[in-house]
Length: 170
Ligand code: AMP
Image 1: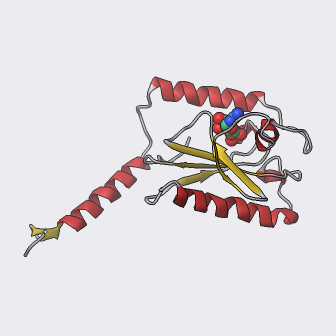
Image 2 (image 1 turned 60 degrees about the horizontal axis):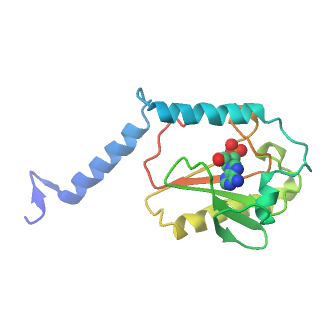
Image 3 (image 1 turned 180 degrees about the horizontal axis):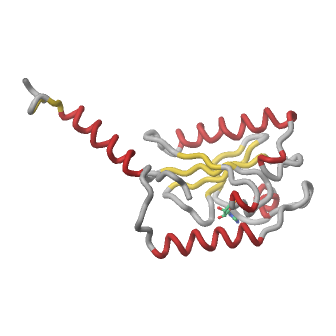
């Protein structure tokens, strides 16, 4: 039969290969490059060096929202602002933030009043993933606090894509 060889279609074979690639990506990696580990170490140092701010203290993200410092904007509406990360960890790495922080320095500070904006941030991640053509999948990350490697205390969703992600994330 056309398209069949040894009882398996090329589509099935491709599906199995894709599943194996995803499965392999979930195995602990024994070999990371030195530039990867240097970058991870500096991210961690930055996070540990940044004391959690008080809820109203402005951060660099306020300056980005107010266009006082430049950024590569990919999305903006009345509530949400999104721009490319200056230190990308994947071919696509976008930060999605609320325009008004309202005490949300991080996810651990969320209150009931933040239901709507938290939903907006995640829904916007989905919209931007589509806009960026991340049709095969992507990852969203919210770092929280020093142990979560958070370095900017204005809640933000990282949208990462354009490469195969690994698990565990480290
Ligand atoms: P986190 O470590 O989760 O708090 O994420 C903060 C992110 O902000 C990091 O990935 C930084 O690379 C990113 N970042 C810091 N300053 C800028 C900037 N001026 N423009 C774009 N991204 C930035």
